[in-house]
Each structure stands twice: as structure tokens, then as C-alpha cells.
Length: 349
Image 1 (cartoon, rainbow, N blue to C red):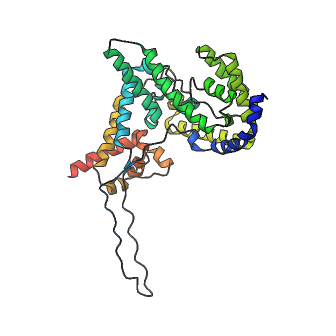
Image 2 (image 1 turned 120 degrees about the horizontal axis):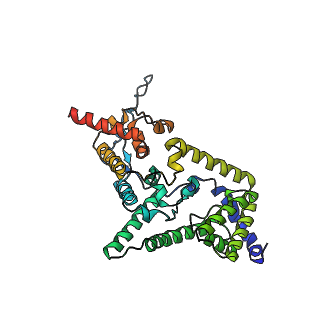
Image 3 (image 1 turned 30 degrees about the horizontal axis):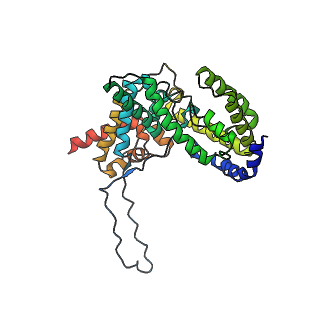
């Protein structure tokens, strides 16, 4: 152990204990904090009025069921879906090779373009924000008579890389050491820096060897001094995370990936260069369905069962629950059901 690490060892023990718990949270797998859902502003507000209690020997009157509420994705989020998939279709070369700083490398994604080969990006603010920003920068270049894709990518990458490094510096232990800083530098060039508690110490060797091979092949390899310091950091910190915690984390990760594969199919989360980017008409259809559903009575949506398997697997048995859970964004069956319900409602008016 180097002197730098040895001096910080005691201070890091408390942070390592916190890390052992944190690596099990869903936040480690989330792309970003989802925006708050829009509540149905038109829903009536129940006003409680004093009433006499029931007479002795009589049953209390049954309470009325709660009024269904719409909690749909905000309009800004729906607009963002349309804008991001339009960029992916119009400028795929700009997003190809642009690192994505959500944890989608766990699903086999290599760059932001892969996130738009499925509905993955539609549920991830980071994926969409990177795409939209890159598209805006590139469009401004073209307007100025410049065509420099690498410069546009570098500008977006630098901003998101700095943000994720700053975040990880607050989350991981021993970041103030030479080894901690080397870890952030070496492991943020292509994706989010991984949790040191992601593998058992002995399993990190194979994973780090793959990272090194990839970085050298892409010309992203740091100096040998930085790489060795990063390896020392991973070895030190991962050795302090209880093995049972790491095993539990790996099980949670595998369960999450399998759920995603089940929900959208292997191709959605393990895309290849042969998979086309989704047609933005799909995104426009999703936004239109949600906007049309806003005009429908919540009671009608709540009383209409859904056949969307993804919704049913999550315990959402009606269209309103499916829409509120945002699962309609990734389920074509749910969108078709909304479109049919809207058409029937208009005919009955």
C-alpha cells in the first residue's frame, strides 16, 4: 500500500461503510432523476365537512373511492423525447462515438447513438440531453459554415464528464488521494466511473483488462502512471467492501438487466450497429397519445383495462395506471389502446 493511501485509510473507513450500502440502491442503476409527474389540475378536491357520527348499532357509511388522478410525464419531457430522436435520425454521425454518461454501458451501449436504437433514451434525461445538446452545437456549426463533428462531441463530452466526475468525487471514498483522482481521470473517458464495489477484488482484474484493451484500441489510454494509480485505488477500496454486499449488488444488477431485456427484448438493451435508430414518428405518436389522454376523463382511463404485458407485470391493470407509470412510453400496446379509446370517446360525443 502506498504512503498516500495508508494515510487516508482510517478516514476512508466510514465512507467505505456508506459505499457498501449505497451500491445496493437503485440510484446506481438509474439514468437520472425523473422529472415530477404532472398532476391532473382539473381533478376535484374533496372538502371534508363535519358530520354526525352513526347511530349506535348502525354501520358507518362506506367511504367513496378516491378520485382517479392523472400523473403523466410533463410536457417538457415528451417534447424532449421527440427532439432527441429527431437529432438521432438527422445527425447519427454526431452521436456515434459520443460517450453516454448514464450507466448504459451495463446494457452494452457504446455511445449515445445506441441509446436511441431502442426506447431506452426516452426514459433517460442524460441520454436525451446529450443528444439534443450535440445536435444544437452541430447545427450552429453548420450555420457558421463549419463542419467539425469531433469538436461538437468534445464540447458535450467535456461538460458531462466534468459533471459526473464531480458527482462521483462526493460519493466515493478517498477521492482526495492521488489514486482516487487517477481513478476518476482514467475511468470517466468512456462512461461513468464504476462503483469500486461492483466486483470482488479478484474479479476486477479481468474487468480492468477489458477496459484497458478498449481504451488502447480507441486511443483513450491514460499514461501508465495514471492507470497504475487507478488500479491501486480499485484494489484498495473494493477489498474493504464486504463480499456479501458485492454479491448482493451483482444480483440486483443482473435482475435489473434481465427485467429490462424481458420488457423490451434483448435487442433493445444489447443493440448492435445493425440496429436502426428508432423512427422519430414513434416519439411523436407517444407524445400525441399522452396529450390526447389528458382530455379524457380520468375515470374512463381508470375503468379501461390494459393488455400491455409490461404494465400488467408491474401490477398496473388499467390504462390510467399504465400512463401514470410512464410505461406507455415503451409499450406500443398501451399507445394503441389510448388511440382506440380516444377515437371511441370522440364518436360518442
